[in-house]
Length: 437
Image (tube, rainbow, N blue to C red):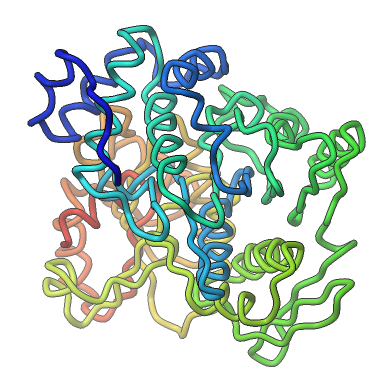
């Protein structure tokens, strides 16, 4: 990254700190963790030269589930064509840097520190949320370094999300809308879909994934109001599994592809959205093949094959997933049904804001037991006792453990060959990835 301009005396005092220290300071700039409005974002962007209007062509992705996987597949497809791609995602798992990929590489500590310092100083101590100020830093990185494309994943909702300041994306995508974050987005599918549909822009095509009927109605109505052409699942494109292959079909013809390397039946729909996007951009089979075979997205039904946890349970089969709402629980249960027969035992920790019983209910039919844990280092964790109570309510034999390691030790003591799935939260998944090396 090119040298940054002089940032002033206050930044000079921060220059030798780590990004963790700067991020901690930024978290104190706003009393609320989430506050959905775009006023602060506009002010901060203006203070650093409005980098959001200087980005390479933008593809903007919203939805409840599947945003990250769909974006990862689009990125893999674009990169298979030799194109340079910026990508912004959230939340991170092990390190904040994962959120910002600059022209294909995770941003470096040095570059991230320079950007965070610049935005922090330019903000002048004004009230701003953590997500907003770090999004401005990402936009600065993307505006500074050349690339062919910019992929933006919505943080929460869409209409008032900090990423929704880009007025002229090339394409928007709305993945499956379901119940989650109701305290911020609304209590019904219709209300939540209205927030997600807020990323649709006048005259800009929108790819629509499989939806509940109520959600689809809202999304299509918003697209019609804004004269935004729709490219909808079931109407303009189709995807299915056939004889161990993935078949994608749209008005341009049929593609016979390998199944997605991201596991689970739900990944076919995500792959379909990614390929529909790539086809809309004029890319062909090379991009489509890359999307389904090269994408990597950790903590989405990820098999753990190395590290201390694997060494502690060498005869067990260890998996990690960060899904955390009822729809994710259903997708996870369907994925487990596709695996070879083996007793499945869950280690689960969740946030206090989630519908724990709703998440666990579909899993109760495919799991033998559950060990409840608290998420280490997370203030908003649900106590293990509460997770255990919800687990018992859906009929799962349940125990409480002090940590993932303790839970795993108890499981393999009685069932050494078990399939163990650590699940319930991206925050728990991040803790596991950090500790497992």
